[in-house]
Amino acid sequence: MLANRGWKSEPWTVELAGLCDAPQKIDVNDLITKLGGIEQRVYRFRCVEAWSMVIPWDGFPLKNLVALAQPKAEAKFLKMTTFLDRKIAPGQAAENLDYPYVEGLRLDEATNDLAFIATGIYGRAIPNQNGAPLRLVVPWKYGFKCVKSIVKFEFVATQPRGTWQAMQAREYGFYANVNPSVDRPRWSQASERIIGPGISRQRTLMFNGYEKQVAALYTGLDLKKNY
Image (cartoon, rainbow, N blue to C red; front, side):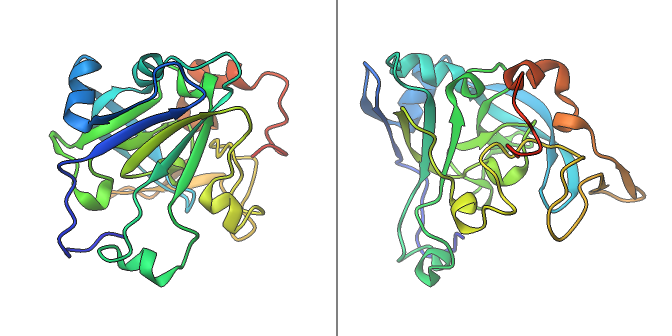
């Protein structure tokens, strides 16, 4: 989506908005400082196209950002929106999707310990193509859920409709939980191809291997209908 047409991730302003008691616009570096700096997480990554890898990320827990915004009681979801600049992003200019790119989480998902905002990858600042300067990482969900280059975090009362969900709801549901028993219309999700030399395929794990940490979030929810 990004091209070398003068696109820069610094300076970068992030907005906390919607149903919260501490709405604000803040520079990304000041935000990181306010949230206590950077830590590293190593997570599995599973693409909806049935490939996978393990990635080391630098960043901060999403729950820290949520706490900074102080969401109101009526806020049930966190909607995240990427940048919009058709002059420097040729994909946006082509209007191949309904930009800006939007994704969302339930608030209890956003405050789960695993939910993360990445600022770096492989020990370096995250490059443009990987979502500079802020990218969502939710390792129990398919990769399309991990919205890149976020400019706005908005607390809302109703479930936001993600970009891919709006584009093709039959294939891309709101939850995007890794579930090997729910196939995409075009391919099975029961196994995955591991990126790397000498490795072929392996069985896909429920919630991408994070079932102990997140399964309780979906108690009573039909994960075949709410995919």
